[in-house]
Length: 334
Image (cartoon, rainbow, N blue to C red; front, side, top):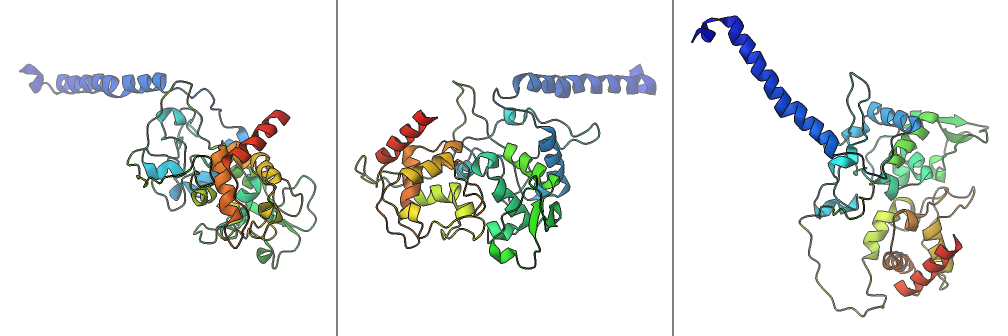
């Protein structure tokens, strides 16, 4: 055939075939993906502050140790309410024409997955403490300190955001530790990482490889007919109040021996879990964990019972029905 003897025609045909394949294999599927995987209705684009925080997240190598992907396996339930889908990342855009890094899914979990960290840990105070000195918040943490994102000021202004440091970490500090705008923007980015609810009627993937739990005969309405309170405490409360319930002096209050926890009148304890609590200067502000994480009366009762009967505490357990009554009252007050 003459075409094989004419290099111009041969190369031209090869180029044409390459372009046609590119259109059908790469361009058309990409356009279809853009059409099919549009941003979820309740998702929002990053603000300028959150975008700057994303840049800081990349600059400091956070992506190397933290993933942002909830796989459809049972063990990933810790990080999100459902497996991740392509639409979760639809609002991510290139950092610039030359820099992609739009989706920071990561490849390993030296640290925990951050997909839903904005819901799991919404506390500004906790994030700032964790960035300044990770071991103050999580004793076994391997994360390096990002102290250069903070300043030491003897006379902070009203506009300054002060880090609530435990007393043990205030040795040698003259004045107060104040967060720079870089630190605040980084926390704003972390707080923006939230799983958005799927549109009504959309069925999400099920988590696979579920661990079967042995069934036990339980009396409906009893304090035994509740989820695992220790597991729920680990997910929702432990990062601040610590595994031993002793909190962190100067940062987060103890639950061990707490008058509120030991009180048989559970009204205040339920309100704190649902609405959060601002102890002013003594401790950091507690977010509305129950409301933010959509905890059910059964889950809240399980957490309370764990706190009431752990670390030497010996208070009366509560039922989900008692918790629900208070939750209903709280709803009418809003």
